[in-house]
Length: 227
Image (cartoon, rainbow, N blue to C red; front, side, top):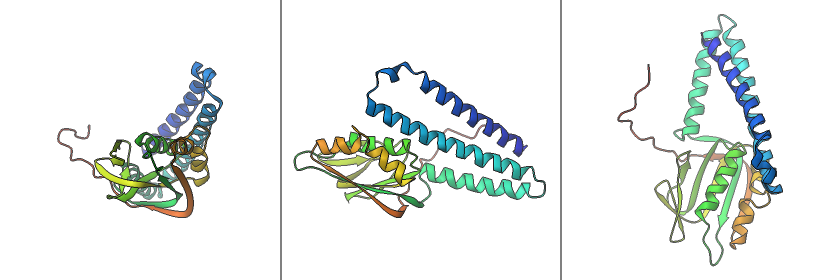
């Protein structure tokens, strides 16, 4: 049964990859896109394709292990634990460490760093394969960044997920350093946008980074697992 489920997941991932590539290849809006936008779109697509192919390979490996008889039960248990850890990292409920970047945003003398610039950076990093992120400031508690995290400006500060942070701001992000740094520095991208407002963006590769801020999941009142 577990092997069949894994096989189904492999098929779905493969189908999603083909659909994504074909839909983007025939999108009429691409004909009117700027060259720098096309570079960013291509970079994002390549990163997503690589992640999907890696996921397919991992699922196929798990399928072979589950079909190997006596080792199947242990393999299934280990896979369940691994998936639980991955989901905890993606949901922001578990700390994480790994290779990545530290990205510092320094405001200019007259203009603050825009919340939209930070959000653009987060989206670019996600598109480039970022797996875990947190943001900190000169004041305030670091905030784990998840799918629902909102960014707004408040009197030169930044409100992130209900937490007020003072400038300058620092993003700590786990993922492939080269791919993520390239995404941030594309023409017309985040770095250029902040510099136009008189600010600076500094990207560092310290090797291993740690994302320790945790996102508190709200208590569910109505939703229950479907049977």
